[in-house]
Length: 316
Image 1 (cartoon, rainbow, N blue to C red):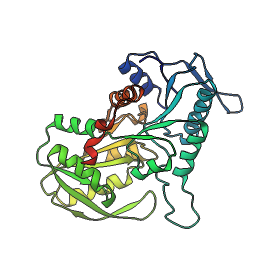
Image 2 (cartoon, rainbow, N blue to C red):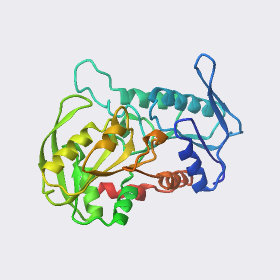
Image 3 (cartoon, helix red, strand yellow):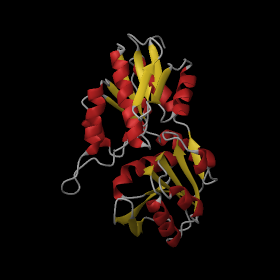
């Protein structure tokens, strides 16, 4: 790990610490605070000249604050003469604004990619983008990891019988099929109609879920409105036990209450790409760590080794 430096902002300090622990290195000391008027102040307190620097900063809520912290840290590292700068963004905010789906709207995912490149990043390491084509929004190399192995291992250990993997929409079929293959389970799809960015209506379930245990897999759980609607539909179609798995637990707005009060939903499994605040803790939410995955990817990137084996399962 010679000439490797890892630092992080305020978005997920526990994840940064865990990654450093897995790699067996000391975290680079950096101050990320605020001036009295609210401007972000960054001061790197160690010499990083000629270092291979990885900045761990998911752009989770508050998205704008954490994004600005990331951009300013990249600029500070660049001006400190680092040899290479990799932005480690386990959760990429603004990813859902990836196309013009109606007149006179921005493609904010591309704008944010441009900002990260302009700030001075040489590489991006991310996980479970909302749409895989977002990799093409960057003019620098992007390593796109998946949490499928971590989540599948958890459900394998649970040894749930009569299992069906459920995709929450048609767009998630590829991911759901990868889960079904790994878990040797059947596949079903929720046919739904989106009424607004936060509200959907379930129309039908494509596939047999009657008397089965189901695991709904998705990349993001935001307000959990779609999740609750799908749980009710699966119950009406005779599903026995209902679980949910997602890479990113945004859990915004009424999500925590909805999950806690949702009858029929046994457990929601998420990763720590976004920190789970104390008030979000409830028996139905299980958080798994992605630190080993990120640590392995960072080590291989630093040593110029292939990392394709870390995400080959989703492509098959």
